[in-house]
Image 1 (cartoon, rainbow, N blue to C red):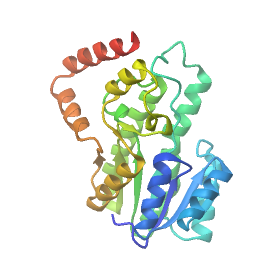
Image 2: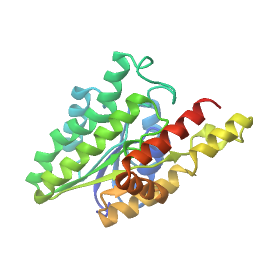
Image 3: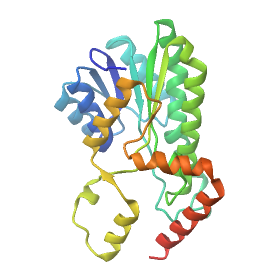
Length: 263
């Protein structure tokens, strides 16, 4: 899918979301930016000549209302990018550290927001000949590693939903891509390592890409209508190895995660 001349809706308050919004605009899309923070979303939208909507995508009524308003006021949505996420603690967050309230937030934001958007938009898109969904997920949805429990589980579920959506609605013109980055640079990661522990953690993380780099790769993947967009090519190799020898993959990852936690 080429975004030129299309109406593209994306979460975009900061980081990768803001970089995607800018790249969509640079490529000629009419961009609508969603975010929970009104001030932030207005700033991002103003910088790219887009439109801003304040919305908590983890609340179905707010997401439905935003989609209705965009469709009525701006026009039919061609591309909907679901990229809001809640990380849910640090890498040591397991069963005991994941209360029900965190599970509910993670499920609603990381998974149900994708499902709610599709439930609302698929009938509209099919009625006008098609549309496209970009599901921003994570390497943690393909390879279980040091990410928090709720994040890992919901990202795996997000990939499953995206696969189902692609399989069951492509015949009506619905396209789907999954973007699975490994590590996207944050302001903290951009700073020099403060100590040896920071250096060790970054060495374990591996390739850290800027939001702009990931946005560029995403645009190319959308143009080719690639289902699985992997900014870090090594992830594809790891995913293949997982499929070829699941037990070996689990053993290797368990040792790696254990080593990270005892640093």
